[in-house]
Each structure stands twice: as structure tokens, then as C-alpha cells.
Amino acid sequence: VQLQASGGGLVQAGGALTLSCAAPRNIFGLTHMAWYRQAPGEARELVARITNDGIKYYADFAKGRFTISGDNARSDGGNDVYLEMKSLKPDDTAVYYCNARALEVDYWGQGTQVTVSS
Image (cartoon, rainbow, N blue to C red):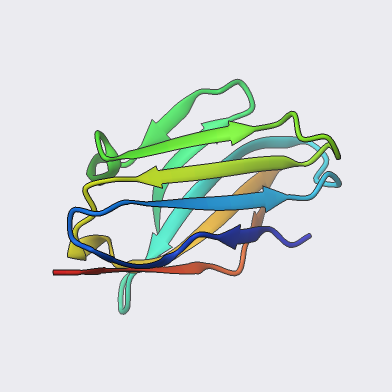
């Protein structure tokens, strides 16, 4: 199962980007989708998560600047998740990964690079 993430790029500090991720319809038992990020030399960290019930969780650094949303009504039965990022800072520079959890199994996208210049 491969998640398809897109939307990364180069942006100046204070700018905005929206990341998108599409999960195929054959993920049985999907419970939530999330965005993680990994900066060079750092561990991967959770950015935001949204459950099937629409409950959202944000890391402290994301609160007030990032918004996660999901669409589980795609016509082919798949799920989409988005991460709207505003007021970006150079510290937000990282590879952002889409994640889906189903029946205690994690599925990952290929990562999309976000670079914020000062």
C-alpha cells in the first residue's frame, strides 16, 4: 500500500504551503491519518493527526499555524488528508511524511520536502 504525498516546495519565512496525501481504498480498518516530519539529523516527529471521527491532534509547534483536514468521502472509496501550513519558519524545514494507521499497521508515503528560507 503506497500513500501519495505532494505539495512540498521552497517558500520564504512567513509563507504558506498545503500538503496533500491520497490513501488508496484498500486500506482496511483505517483508524487515522497523520503527518510526520523529519529534519536532517533529527528523529521523525508527529506534526498532526486526524481520526476517522474527525478528532484532531497537533504537536505544540503546529498549534495555531497548521491545520489538518481529511476527506473520507472520495468517490473511489479512498481517503485524502491535507496539511495547511501558515506562518512557516526555517525550523519547519524537513521532509514531511503522510501516515495512515490501520489495524495497528502503519503505512507511509514517500515524503515531500518542505524548505523554508529565512
